[in-house]
Image (cartoon, rainbow, N blue to C red; front, side, top):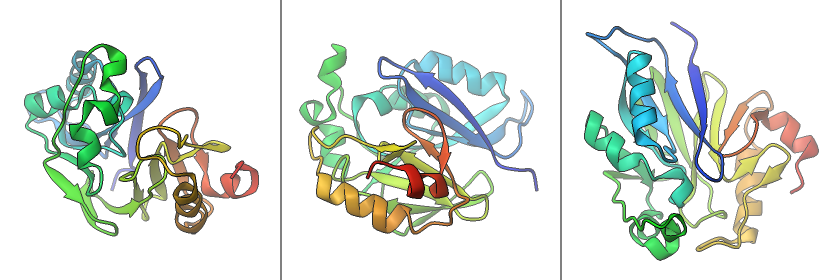
Length: 213
């Protein structure tokens, strides 16, 4: 089996990491399967990039519902008929422009996920099994996605390189964030590669030693 591939692009006013994750590219006639994580904005760019890579998104995964992670989701869903997945406690934030902060962009937005995910639920995407880890703190419904076989964690705004997500935005909670990181994410193998919502990638081992939390 091909090694898992993660193509990251930085988009939007807050320089959000959007990830296109796949195992193998296909052809123009028969694109390979991929999924998109946290499509920040610029849907035309993301749609074009997927097509240039001969990939077709089979799902859109959201780590949480803040505006800088969701603005392109609806257009990608419509273009590729790809369902949107989010944590089961994040729907209220996704639906409410005052909570998801889309008003900061000058364009309010309400988004409904096709499927709300429970803690511990598994998804089969890109020939991998992804476990949903409920990590409240940055928002009440924040989740991370963990692929044990490939040792990959998509951490959203819960865990950054030597930092963690802010908790002063709607539904944030610093105590819950501390528990999510220290008890859930730091329990993963130290060689796990961490792909955050902003900034450079890191590892669980590095964060256990150097993170500010």
